Image 1 (cartoon, rainbow, N blue to C red):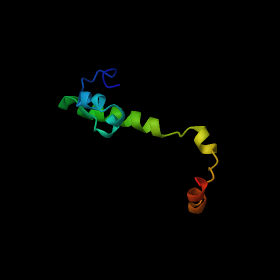
Image 2 (tube, rainbow, N blue to C red):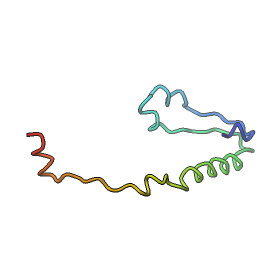
Image 3 (cartoon, rainbow, N blue to C red):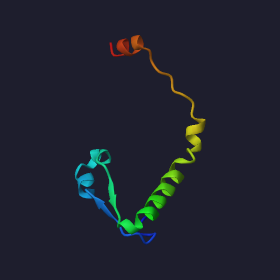
Image 4 (cartoon, rainbow, N blue to C red):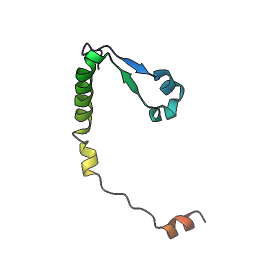
Amino acid sequence: MLADAGIPCHLHAGALRTLLAVFGPFAPAIVLVPEEHGPAARSKVDDVLRAATSKPPVALLQATPTRRLTWDAQTTAGR
């Protein structure tokens, strides 16, 4: 996304996220950009993150809550 906007960038420790596979999302993603591109990069990342979280999927809005078992029902269900 930053490269598409003409902002040079480097993902620090990107190989660590790949190495950790399933646990990769728990490793921080550090994006390095030249100082002169900092404000533009922050603005671009902020715009993308806001767009990604602004509208929840319709299915989530219309979902009905699932029935939860009580503690007694959970402990006796396996017997």
